[in-house]
Image 1 (cartoon, rainbow, N blue to C red):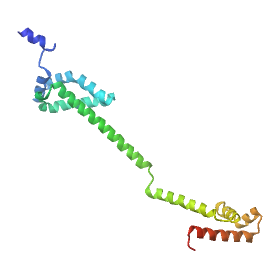
Image 2 (cartoon, rainbow, N blue to C red):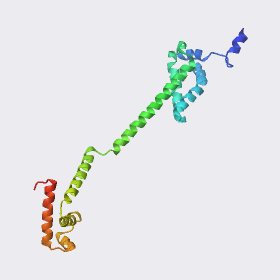
Image 3 (cartoon, rainbow, N blue to C red):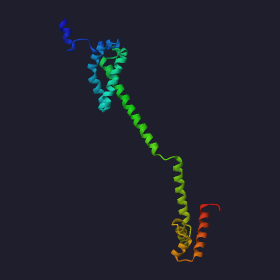
Image 4 (tube, one colour):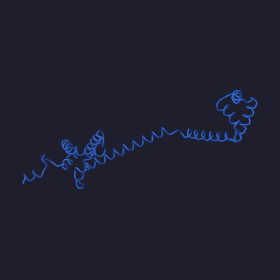
Length: 194
C-alpha cells in the first residue's frame, strides 16, 4: 500500500503545493523555498507572455512571489488548485503592470503635447495678426495702382518719399498726394478712426 502512495506522488516525495502553502501561511520559510522552486518557472513564463519585456517580467515575477509569501493565508483549496491561485496572482500583477505602463505612457504623451501647445494668448495673437494682414491686403486692393505702388514702396519697403518719387519718376508732391490719399482710403477701409 505504501508503494501505491509513492507511485502516485511526484518524484520528490513530500508535501504537495497546497500543503506547502498551508505551511507558508504559518510562516515556514523552508516550505516557501519549496513553493518558490515549484512555481517560479511557471510564474515567470506567464508574466513574460503578458509583458514581453524580460527585465520587467523578472521584476513582476519577484513581486508575485513576495505576494505569495504575504498572502498565503488567503489561499482556499476549495476555490482551486494552489498552482492556479499562484498563476492568477501572477496574471493580475502582470496586467496591472501593463496598465500602469500604458497610463504612464499616455500621461507622458499628454504632457509632451501640452509642452508643444502654444499658450492661448499666443494663438489668439497669431490669429488676430493673420486676420489683420488679410484685411490690409483686401484694403490695399481697393487702392489705385499708383497709390498701391507708393504705399508699398514707402511703408513695406521702407523707402523715403523722395526715394519713392525718384524710383517712380514722379514729382515729390505727387507722391505725397498719392500717399496721403492712399492712407486715407486704407484708414476708411480698415475702419480706423482718425
